[in-house]
View 1 (cartoon, rainbow, N blue to C red):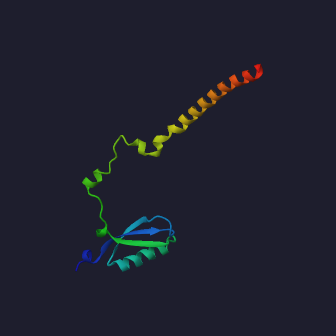
View 2: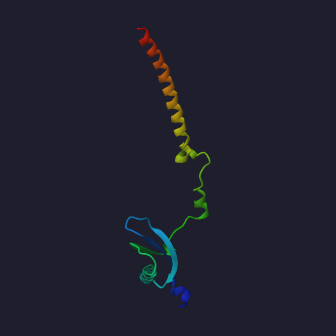
Length: 118
């Protein structure tokens, strides 16, 4: 059995805390998943503290093919789905409020004159 068949490729992920997201760290070669986990632990013991380590055999990870990735492309007319597309609303609301204040102020002028003449 050659060395190419003995070692398998693994991808290593970690979490800094129990609530933090899983992050990709590195690839490695190991004869099995138990040794892959031990080797990953040894690597992290020399680096930074982690709360959890995941080791996944690369061949068990399925990624999208080219045709599937094409379905992820966004259509150009979908800006309204992004919150940044609503940035103009604050300015519009301010203009609307200013218009309301002006209208209220104008109406109050008529009330003052009525009070003075009454």
